[in-house]
Amino acid sequence: MILVKLGGSVITDKSQYHAVRLDVLRRLCEEMTGAEDIVVVHGAGSFGHIMAHEHALAGGHRDGSQIPAYAAVSRDVRELNLMVLDAMIEAGMSPVSLPPSAGITLKDGVLEDYDTGLLQSYLDMGMVPVIFGDVALDSVQGFAICSGDQAMERLAKELSPRRSIFVSDVDGIMDRDPAEQGAELIGAITPDDLDSMTFHARVKDVTGGIRRKVESMLAMCSPGMDCIIINGNVPGLLADAIAGKEVRGTRVKVD
Ligand code: IPE
Image (cartoon, rainbow, N blue to C red):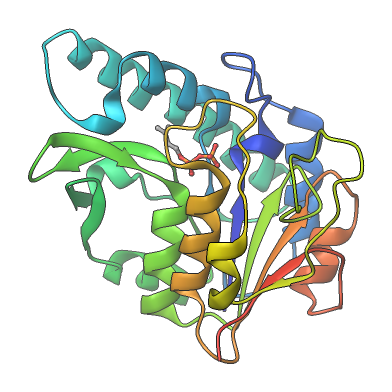
């Protein structure tokens, strides 16, 4: 099976509250059509990060004013999720939404209980399970953010996909801020490279930014698994990556 994460940075404009990039979202869904045994995870982008940051939701429950914010974020990420489902259905896919807040608990911000049995049953039926970055309950801090990357990590461990694809708004992991001139793509990353790398953050990201992403990709990788980050703004790349073709991007490898 294949795991795909549609990053919030590519399906939304992360710097602007509630801004979906519908044309890109629709094209990416068309590129996934026809893939068998596929699970889709999508990020929250500007439907989650901005308000979650404003109300410090990632740090857990500290005061009552956060509760309405939790409700609003949970509602907003569902709005984006519905748009993703619509785009998938329009493209001819049969998605089914499995919201983390209704099935996942965390412990101190780290994903703990996740029963993937339901997801597997939908997959066996030929449907496409869709999971997304969400707010969720936390046994220590009351609530926390369940990022799509955390869900990817767990799903990779449980489902042993042959390929995991992260669709981003840059070509892959760059050696400096992609906005800077001369930024170059790093073709492959192994666990040994992590400490020597410098990481950049361009926009508010309550789930840890690029470093966390690389760590999470390394953690989910197993020998022989194809784990790659690609640019979703380049038409055709996702379809090629799903088909197993060599594409421009950053491969994360473990021995
Ligand atoms: C974040 O999910 C969820 C919330 C902020 C509620 P992700 O971390 O997976 O989202 P992106 O891909 O960075 O936007």
